Amino acid sequence: MKFQTLGLVSELCAAVESRGYLEPTPIQAGAIPAILDKKDVLGGAQTGTGKTAAFALPMLQLLEKPLNSAPRALILTPTRELAEQVAESFIAYGRHLHLKVLKIYGGVPIKPQIRSLSRGIDIVVATPGRLLDHVQQRTIDLSNIDILVLDEADRMLDMGFINDIKAVLRLLKKPSRQTLMFSATYAKDVEKLALSILKNPVRVEVAKRNAAAEDVRQRVYFVDRAGKLDLLVHLIREGSWYQVLIFVRTKHGADRLAKKLNKADIPSAAIHGDKKQGARTRALDNFKKGDLQALIATDIAARGIDLVDLSHVVNFDLPQQAEDYVHRIGRTGRAGKSGDAISFVMPEEMKKLNEIERVVKTSIPAKTVAGFEPSAPVTREPELPKPGADRGSSHRGNRRGETGAQGSADRHPRSGRKR
Ligand code: AMP
Image 1 (cartoon, protein in one colour):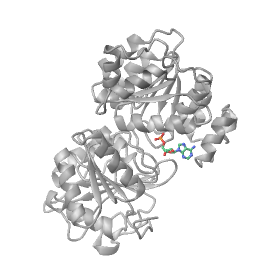
Image 2 (cartoon, helix red, strand yellow; image 1 turned 30 degrees about the horizontal axis):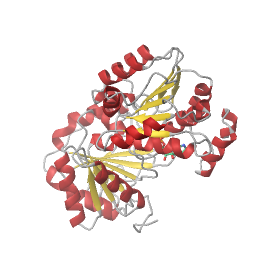
Image 3 (cartoon, rainbow, N blue to C red; image 1 turned 60 degrees about the vertical axis):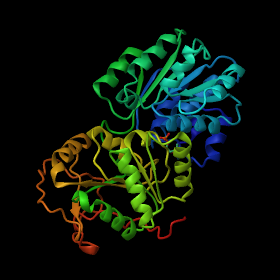
Image 4 (tube, rainbow, N blue to C red; image 1 turned 180 degrees about the vertical axis):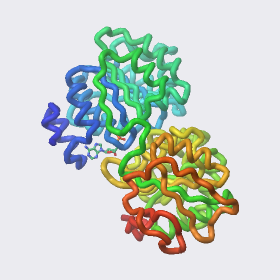
């Protein structure tokens, strides 16, 4: 299928083609015609499915000409990083259309945002907190909004933004407003919000509900807390991993791990909520450039970050919420590429693992590595089917004495650091 067949104008088709997109992803194929048709849309898609272009492209087309007045489109995102990426996408896809895009988030001076708003803006991409600061200071007028997007709605609700969202909704005056909502998971609160703000929405679902992306190979390694760092270094080196995104539970843990990996000659940086925006952006840019081999993140910091072609994600610490597992591993296996999601599980965390398996509806293949076995025995309750995604599960006892279903740590033949 071609982008043209979705009803997009040639300027937009040219912009996506110049980014190397050959054909629409499923969420794009489903959402673009509906949005162009001015329908409300409820998109069930996580980051990595091409959801940003799924709403950005048709919105650019509907907004058409720059008016340079009060904003006509508002995209709410849970984090600054996601706001940054969504704004970048609008700018990139709309480069032939000259619509003005402004990102609004906290942690940076408000004055430049005020100046830009006073000059007229077409599209605002914002996190709720700073947006409401502008509302209070009367530096933004939201009464002209024709299209509202709630991106990663589930994350926004998890982060406690419900009242901010409601406050924003009260400021949108146009009865004909089109509303688009994207969410990776559908907890009850997400459904409730969707029901209250969407009018006869077209539902577009790409990932199975609460299920992990199919082209992510998931694996679990049983290990003691004390063995995690060495096991990680071993896996990165033995598998010649090009790059890895590592999730940890705490900010302090992120800093500590970055330090230790750097000591082990694995160039690393940590991103978390205590880091200044500049430091976070720098770390992300260095990671994208390939100057860093490992990026260590807490859940909040990692939300929405757009990392293309990421081959490995490691849950160094299991997530607090089983649902977060889906978000975390959604960082790999994106846009049709395959990836490996590896979780370190301590023997005392079997309950948590079972919860995760219930959410992803599969039993995740597990293994131990010789020299890193946990001191306590591990007992599993094999109650769920093995994932179809674990395509290489027939070998046993692969190199370095690994036992259990063979994963794919060695399947990425990138030997050097730079591609
Ligand atoms: P998103 O889910 O919006 O975060 O997009 C994930 C990644 O897929 C981004 O890096 C996009 O640039 C990329 N992408 C989006 N649409 C396509 C497409 N049709 N073909 C290939 N890559 C795409």
